[in-house]
Image (cartoon, each protein chain N blue to C red):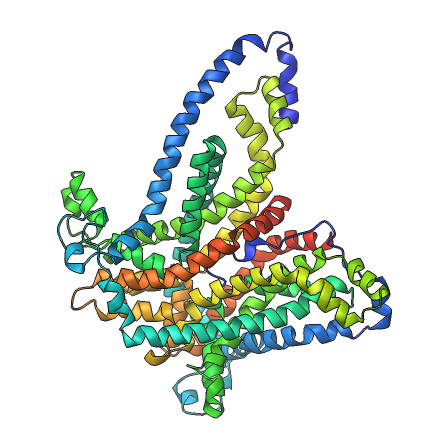
Length: 309
Length: 322
């Protein structure tokens, strides 16, 4: 701002308005139209991969192998989807993904909610160190830990297979550990947003602490819990790296790992891209739907965080 | 899993003006409650992350060879593994490649993201909504699906990219195998990663731009500032904190790229020449069962992450102190 006010004295205010005003009014209009055209072009380019996935998914593979691609759904078919859905590997992977995602969401929400309550409603010794640790842990890459996690689960699995490699619980625990830190941080904002006075007022009116919490605070936190739950769903559903390492058995693959082997398996006999794209679509659609569902909340959180920097 | 540039970490937390923890009375009455509430989270973190980190530190200081695979007790060898790994030219090739790849991707992502954010500000509102919806779609697409689609787009035989290049007159691209050469391999990897990461960056910067008050811009215009001056003297300085944070996050995320590379390598890429740090650890540990070496590299990656994350964590802590 100071830079602009510095520039002002050069031209006396009375001289500035008349002439440039007219010129400026027409120039931006042309500029705006050109930029809008550019915006449409960029949108089309960015959209193309998603469009191509959907289009290929409803096109027979023979048509995809033709020398000239078709850019419209000219040979619409759902055979690719029925092909994927009848693949026993897909159904098994879907079951694994649903179980792991479900267990992870429940564990993450419970653990992170309790911790978020602690750090936003109490000041206690070690609070700052805990928050600091949570923020650092949230940044740790799976790639820096998966070898140890692999060895840990294979060790545990020797005495307790339900927690070992290829187990739903084992991988869910790892996912929970990776997601709890960020979820604590996300929920902390929501909990802090519900004034404790509300709860205290309810207690003055005769509710017990537990009742005041359940009737007053908890309903107000529901949107935060939903947003965190969807976040955990997206992460667990999409996770590739850890699953690749700790779910080595083919029958225990999650959907992302299954898609990779589905693609690799067909490399030698010529990839059936139509079915691969149908499979990608089936994996992507629930994610896109959920993502758009919470998007508003995520972006508003992002504004607050990013703008404060 | 935090490696996916989904809404993840940077979406920071929804903050509220009344963020100050309410405490006063409760502290004296129930001093143990907060610790009880933290217990499950701390326990799962110790099991899922604490023990693995501890195991890696210990293992990186031990001999963990064939003998140990068959049950012999590991011997303490001090920093031998680090010396062995860090005098290995392969590691330095991977480190150099990872850093170069990370910086190119991070700067490209932020530059394009900034461009799109400014574009969203400049266009008609209808076009802006179209752009936002399209960016959200790209953002929401799961990593594995996105990489798979790009493999199909760049397929050497029937991929639409080669078809288009041939149509445009570049006959040499008929049947061109993009993923078989390291340089073009990383070109495709960059396109995938930029496509996936730009939406988050563009949306964050755009959100920052919307916070610039109209009065400030109006005042600047009255003072005779042109669009270029407004951009360089007002908009960019005001969104600089957002730019710095998203650039830092992109650097951290792009340094740990693993899945995209792994999935693209399946198309027949020369693995040794296309490995990044994460892939190197995977090959070393899961591939050659060199757990001590893999642990040493993992510790290096973890330390690097913590070092790079420090400024980001500091900015988040400021928010916590509000």
